[in-house]
Length: 121
Image (tube, rainbow, N blue to C red; front, side):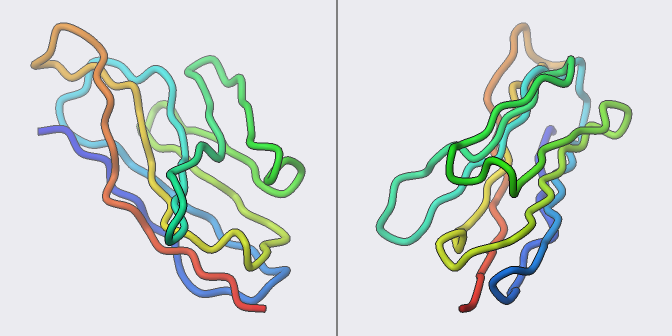
């Protein structure tokens, strides 16, 4: 059974930093893209950052220059380093991956359970 498990969320003051981690576990054949999304109360889920297996990245305009996505392919783990946090970054952050499980014949979308990030002013 494949699952994504996030960690690293919490409460931080504006201007502070947090590092989120998301580890994929189970019988995995391959992982292509890995992404971080976030959803604030009353808002739609939005893409924050993405990274493909080769290392290319892209970011939402609202986080460029403040957030950095990276991955450790050997550990099937993706990270999100968040610096200069603002109150508007407050949301539940979700990990997402295009993952090919051993028991499957294709890549499928997998989601983590989410981790809360709260930035106080």
